[in-house]
Amino acid sequence: MFGFKSSAAKDDSHCLLKEVGLATLNKQHLRLASYAVEFSQIVDELSAREPVNEDWRRIDALFSKITRFVATHFSEEEELMRKYDYPDYVAHKKLHDKFSAEMRKMQAEINNRNIKFKKKMSSLLWDWLYHHINEIDYRYREFFLSKGLS
Ligand SMILES: [Fe+2]
Ligand SMILES: [Fe+2]
Image 1: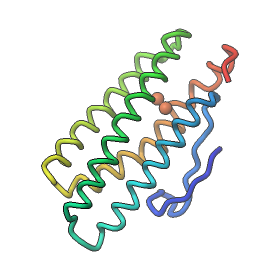
Image 2: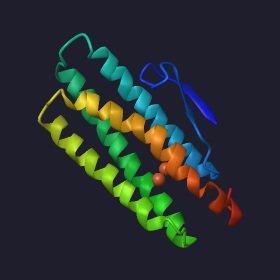
Image 3: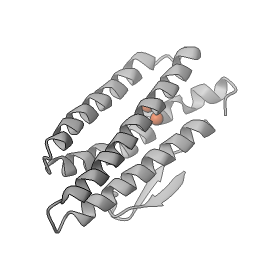
């Protein structure tokens, strides 16, 4: 378990990320968590005021960093699953594709400078951390460990 703090975490102060067995993937999950924290900080700052150009530039930069990272992470995770014939590969990939589609929708809202993206983006990222990593990714832990990976 990795713990990290954020005001956006559902239990109000603390989010626990499960270890999924592979060091590289754990590291990538932690990086995603740190982006979610970074994103929440911007959202917190904007709770009391309208975004100015500088805020949008920060949002653009962070969002493209997250998008690139998520694409890399998904392709590495999927490649490992294909390589070792993970039985749940197809269903798992579908969830990755769904998340990527949500990210594209979010990108369109950001491009349109629609501030409503804020709330959606926060819940998308936090749901991902709580649900996808801790429940869906966690399922491949034993499988990869049984293949001798660590
Ligand atoms: Fe993952
Ligand atoms: Fe995954």
